[in-house]
Image (cartoon, rainbow, N blue to C red; front, top):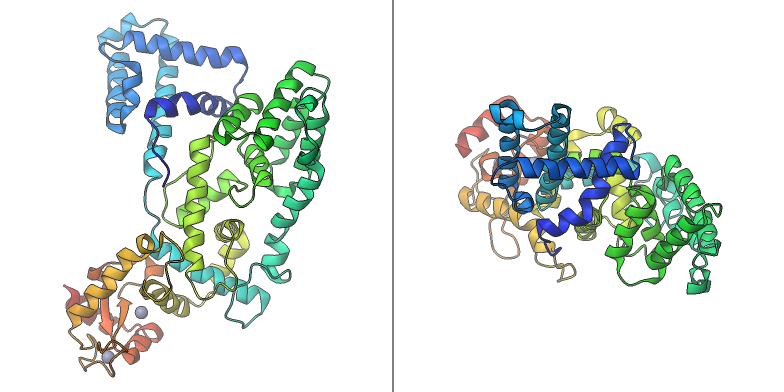
Length: 456
Ligand SMILES: [Zn+2]
Ligand SMILES: [Zn+2]
């Protein structure tokens, strides 16, 4: 878990580059003077909103909402006349929207990953890989060089090696700072990034480290030096934003080649789409900041833990493998396969198997496991207890007892998870294996009705 920073800290760290990035995305100038105008507007606003301690707005989401309302009042009521010039007022609103957006994002990122959506997408992903590779093997192997994972995703590990060769960090000394050598090495490394860094950001980087601009070059090189040789990652990340701009792909890539066991590349728009599929409201687009990056990595590493708990993963998945999984589920090819080829009934049953997998028996390999499974496990347990050893469709006793002497029944989701059904006791029943199979093959409307009446 990430230590939660105070809002003031977040504010100082992250807002400036955020404003920069927003201005860029709106096609506006991001020069020093324009940024300063935004800041001046902000402080001008502070002075004109009565009884408002500027920084205290950022203590909580509620206070920020309040501040927003106050500003609206200020603008639309008589007191607004005191605020001059009028043409500045819309920019206050815009700024508050930035902040609101930004802080909302910080809070929402503490949400749990929706386990049923994660399981569903993971099962689809494994089926998709098998389908594309035409491989009946049950196991998914990220280390295999052939097949879709090797061909389309494996290049990321190769890039790390190639980029590091260009970087030659071992040879760097402090005396290199300002010589242009560090910049040249770093640029060559970034050129190896393939699609992991957006083209535009590569050009920007080239301009920044251009030896023609000596002074800036020295500053950029000292930041690069800190990224690769320094100890304070957070400071180096923030300095990089201040120097290179909020170039999320670029900065994340530098950290990724620094240490691919701790850091990841990012493609914000695409990951936002995948997170949406996983039921996460976490956004990375236009939110380049250290805290956002750390949260992004935390989410991917929780997904990796989940993956490593599944039997179908052949060799433990690395952080970059979980990254590949999350990446693939937003891709067009995957989405087409999902619409046209995937066998929904099979996916659904496999998803239920993943969710009901017991916590015990796997050893304490991953600390976050109990967190990941707890909700679904509770549902399974509650549903079995409620059934009292009798199948809720055919009303026959469970056909046999499990190793613990408990009547064997399987949990089934009446409205399938893939159709938006909830992973809760109001949508789940306990069935004998026969009836369970029947529900997945026939899903007869009368049976569904019967089961729905049972859980009422
Ligand atoms: Zn039955
Ligand atoms: Zn089922």
